[in-house]
Amino acid sequence: MSAATTRSRTPDRLCAEAVDLARSAAEEAAAPGVVGEHVSLVSEGDRVVTHFFEAKEAGYRGWRWAVTVTRASRAKVVTLDETVLLPGSDALLAPEWVPWSERLRPGDLGPGDLLPTEAEDLRLEPGFTGEDIPPPNSVFGDAVPSHDLAERVEAEDAELTDRRAGTDTTIDNGRGAIAALAEELGMRRARVLSRYGLHVAADRWEESFGAKTPMAQAAPAACVTCGFLVPMAGSLRQAFGVCANEFSPADGRVVSLTYGCGAHSEAAVMPKPPTPAPHVFDSMGTDEFPLRPARDGGSVSSEPDGESEDLGHS
Image (tube, rainbow, N blue to C red):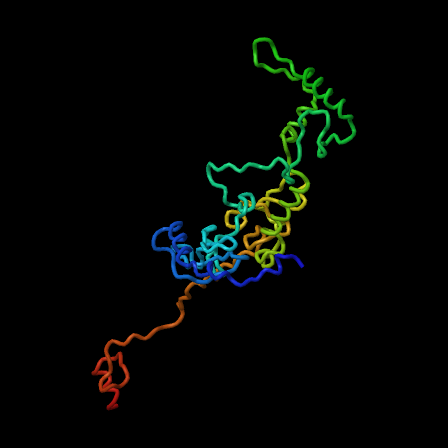
């Protein structure tokens, strides 16, 4: 057993009694009035004691001023070792620092902001630069040796393009060139999307606008049959397209062909309200219109009074 483990953890009496010395050191290091009551003390070793005082500074809830004092062997004078502000068990701490590259989220980039891409970004791979070694995604593959490919590009550039002296006019003889083809395919870029970057993007689009979303589950049909779907180029056209329906929640977004929404072009047409039938006029019957109301609440009569009395005495 080492000598360090046999040392007593009982605080040294003189160091433990040096509370006023520790408070003075804490008040000297801190702002006036922010050192609170003496909380506790801890024995750090032989004749080494740390005193803890409550910190009353705003924003430092649960923190403590820690002042370590010590004395030499057989000495009766206690001296100051160090003073520091430390968090307690219930202290209010700042979140763990995270690099900006890991804190960045989609939508954080604003106007004027620059987002540098790492040199070893797995989402990208070298494009066609005309160097001796063609990139892995080159359409030429291994059909043409690397040194022959570079020489062919330079030879065809010199052969197919003739610049007149003193002018910027370019004469093209109409033949296809490897360099022109590479530029047309986007292979003149320094870096292009790698297979990993392609898969990551496809997974992200599938999660946002794919078949498993609630909108797609309730849709009458999939986007593959929708007239508002704009096909994509390349291998992505087999699984994705761009929505061009302004009333769709995915307008202007890349959507999976299995996605769908209620704004599908072939959705059921809303039924029209029924048209009421025209009014019918009866031109065959007759309607009786009384000239005056009957006397004593009787029936209405349309005959003169004299005629009715004569008929009653006959």
